[in-house]
Amino acid sequence: MKPPPFEYHGPRDLGEALETLAAVGAHGKVLAGGQSLIPMLNMRLAAPAHLVDINRLAALAVVRETPAGVTVGALARHSEVARGGAHPLLGQALRLVAHPVIRNRGTVVGSLVHADPAAELPAVLAVLDGSVRLASAGGDGVRNDGVPRDGVRNDGVPGGGGVVALPAGTAVRDVPAREFFTGPMESAARPGELAVSAHFPALGARTGTAFREVARRHGDYALAGVCAVVRLDEDLHIDAARVACIGVGPVPVVVDVSGVCERRPAVSVDWPAVAAAVRERTDPEGDVHASPAYRLHLVGVLAEQALREAAREAAA
Image (cartoon, rainbow, N blue to C red; front, side, top):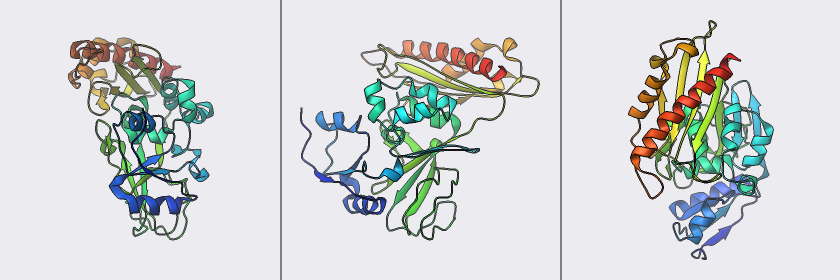
């Protein structure tokens, strides 16, 4: 299969890329890793009139770790981020993403913007309450938090992550994960905007993480999956517990189960009750691969496994 006709753009710097995206608007698509976009073009599931290739923008291939968390630039590849080992949960999720050849080209930020409800990385961003930084040309040069951007900034500001130097006058929005994923394959990115980075908040002390999923074959999209974050207090009682579920809703389904854990030590938590609370918050659909009932069963089992594992890691 061949893609439909499109006009190719290969900007040499970020300013040119933003100007090009502003000019093509809703008729353009961004090419970064291309591991989702190219198959969609070949299957005629996407037919943009313009393709804006950002692979020449080396400044976007950045990963920075600070006390606030890890910020990943738009051209940071899955494999590079995984090898860096900067964030435990991000690393656990990346090991489950497709196959090595895909991870060598695919990008973390691209996966977030693609917003597949069965993908791992949107769930990680959601459970951590991270954010995505969106940039566009011709704005007032002000971030959505009111900080002026006079000239080029590279200040490590949390949120979407201020690690990418932006041209003067660039408009920037830091969109939290709970608002970024708006539906299956839909995100809050507007026509003309470029997702320049994503920020994954750091884990606190006595915090453990885990990611469990079931797929028909290794590397396939998960039939269902759960990532978990558990924080213990000084007495090693569960202080906070959250999960994000994939494959069981139009966007990652985040469930806070701290109340169900009742601030107990992990060994005395009613884990089946916790799993039931997670199932109650999901409403999976069926397809040729799995029925709604099977996916509902899976998400409960995986939630219990992931939470138990995260609690053990937090106590270690």
